[in-house]
Length: 111
Image 1 (cartoon, one colour):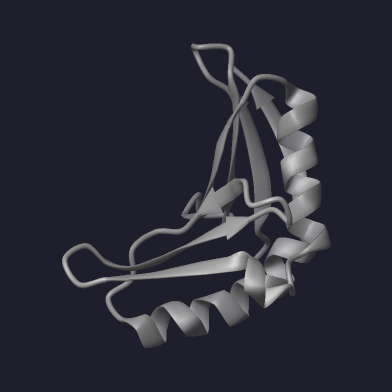
Image 2 (image 1 turned 30 degrees about the vertical axis):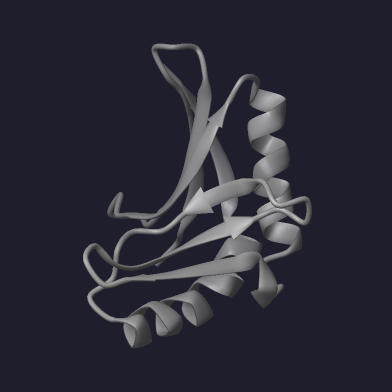
């Protein structure tokens, strides 16, 4: 499986990225960015800090289910995960995702 960052320009002219599988399953959702350069910078930060576990902020919500956010070293949210069926499954997925986050290529699609 070859995962990749997909950058899209939304109708609002903001840029957003997703980390996706070849089958277009979304692994991480990025925030909206005003410029392509800022969007690329967020991806670069994710890649640089992919193994910094303290930047993975876990949320064990009893109602919605476990999820996590990845923050920058300054505390800004860079990406959010899907909701998982269990905290254990989420933790396993984080460990699987770390090398994927660090090594995936970036593809830009403008709409």
